[in-house]
Image 1 (cartoon, rainbow, N blue to C red):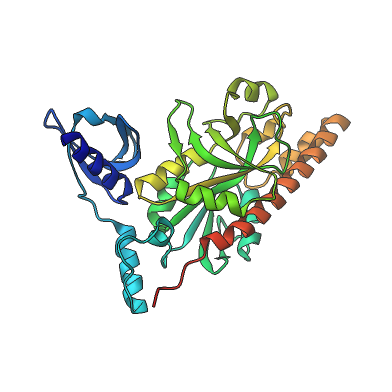
Image 2: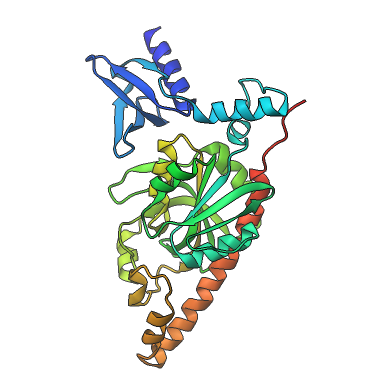
Length: 333
């Protein structure tokens, strides 16, 4: 009976979109956001959103839903304004699809341009605004690897989509192919699975495109050479980037559903030019300097430009296809 009660508490905590307080058998308490659970453990981001903590279910005595469920509160406000209140057993889609915007995070300005076209807008500085099938959306270029948590705290979205370009870790992936992350992993091996309630409809929306589902590896530095990518490749890993894992962690810290979608630029056996290791507002001058190195360098740059164009067009088309799945439903009457 005790174990059954603990299992029920864990399921409630996992479905909750606010902080919970876990009381352990030794009397200690832990406050955090539950983002994963299995038959023997639950995993949380602590309340500072800087640490991941794994707790054995055998140690759990009680779990209290102590933090505010911000998504539920926003939904209730929206529905009351519409004149009706949906029942508590609304589906996972209906729970968060209220008046909140979609936040699209990219790393670089070149990625932001593709996203802006899908939103029907233009970049203004590091952001672009528009709509995805009627849903208000804002896209931000947060730099390589950073800025996700601050963006989530400032924008308070109802869904986060991490997207942009990536390098291939699977030899079958070519420029312009898409990777929809079933999970994202950092260099230490920490892993964040994408929510099935979003992953399944997203995969259906992208059916017919060259899109694979699998794990994305997030690194803290650009892996520009074929040798570096081969060293990082492993079973189940499809692609690598620098933003998807921090974005997933930031989303989990706020109880926000997330997806990660990447378009391949460089195949596994291809190397990027040295300037790709640095973050630049514009790569025009570094590219021109590289081209002066000789005919071979110029040919490689032209090829890279074609790959980036394929990736950008694929990403733009993918976002348009995903848009209907993000449509805010009308309140029930």
